[in-house]
Amino acid sequence: MRPPTTTLGRVLVTLGLTTAVAAFLVFVPLHRNWFDLKVYYGAVGHWIDGGRIYDYLKPGTHYGFTYPPFAAVCMLPMAVVGWYGALAISQLLNVAAAAAILYICADATIRRAGWTRWYAYAVLACMFAWLEPVRDTASFGQVNLLLLALVLGDAWLLTAGARHPLRLNRFAGLGIGLAAAIKLTPAIFIVYLLVTRRLRAAGVATGVAGGATALAAWADQEASWTFWTEAMWNTDRVGSLSYVSNQSWQGMLARLTEPFAEPSRVVWAMGVLLLLCLWAWRARRAVAAGDELAGFALTGITACLVSPVTWVHHLVWLIPAVAVLADKGLRSAPGSVERRRMIGWTLGIYALLCSSIVWLWRWNDGGVPGILGSNAYVWISLGLLALLPFRAGLRDGHGDGPYDLPDPSATMGACAHATGSPSKSLPPSRQSVPPASPMQPDSKPAHSG
Image (cartoon, rainbow, N blue to C red; front, side):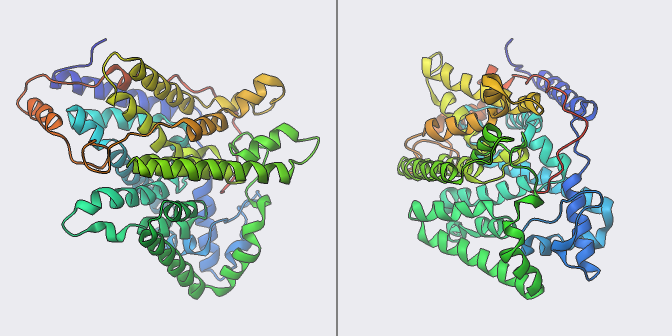
């Protein structure tokens, strides 16, 4: 079916997609009942009342606050606005973060292709909302989208910010530093800046993270001491490593060995070392090619793999890699084998990330089907880390990449749309609707990690 070429057709498609997404989110029983947000809210309230924040456990569970103290400082407004206010702010921040992520990852592709921008963004927003990591982030009340937006903001500063009259690239590292102070996982992006020799940005990120951590220590010295010497190392606070939601290298090893034995720390460490070496090599190659978004995407993938605990909702870090893969396909010649292959892989990975497939093996992960299915997202991460393509020629501004200005042909296409002349519309790859996710068990994973 051809994409709509009239405004009325685009409006009808947008309304249909929006209705389908809303119905899916409302009626399919995948909601997490704001579990993690309730942990944050209860912990901050306990802290304000004079209790020790890392002593707090959500009633009826053994889950408590697991983030660095600076995250608790950032969440202090929840104690003022109340529960419903905190819930509303959480969702509004997620929407704002999603808008920033879509802009940074897709705007130049939309401009280069000459698509109608509002329509392209509407379709992408619906597809974005269908992703399981995005759904889980929103329904848990998590902060993953906010962290991703902060980190990708630095990717924008390193590229488009360098051409801004105010030289905004001077502030690159600010978002990474804040994200690393809120949660430890984004600290790997500081290493990325060092590996790719952006020393100024690495210094800014380190300084911001250190300053924020010092501020939290000033606010509550005891809480900071407890986190860095005790709570940080207590994995029992976040749940079982072998739980199917843990889609990290460590989680896969745990599912292969438990309940008969604990996963070997030597095997885990050797795997992490190999993954880090592969990442450093490929990240440097991405930056050498001028593809900053690919470098950031590879770093997010690696963070998911090497972290001891990577719940499904943490996999929002794979979104930039999917954007790079899609853009690579759309750059290829129409009808070419490469274009079909890239778009096919993009749609396949997208469909799997929407499918909730790993939950089919929540209770039984034995045998070859169990090994493949229960670790489906781990396999996706490994494949993207090893094979994510780069888009050469972006650094010098001639490749009209995710952060470059549009080339004349893209501008002409946009003008054609503005004057009503038909040019390019969304390709079939933008129209796919993912399959409905299988129903998960009523009891949801209770973790705040």
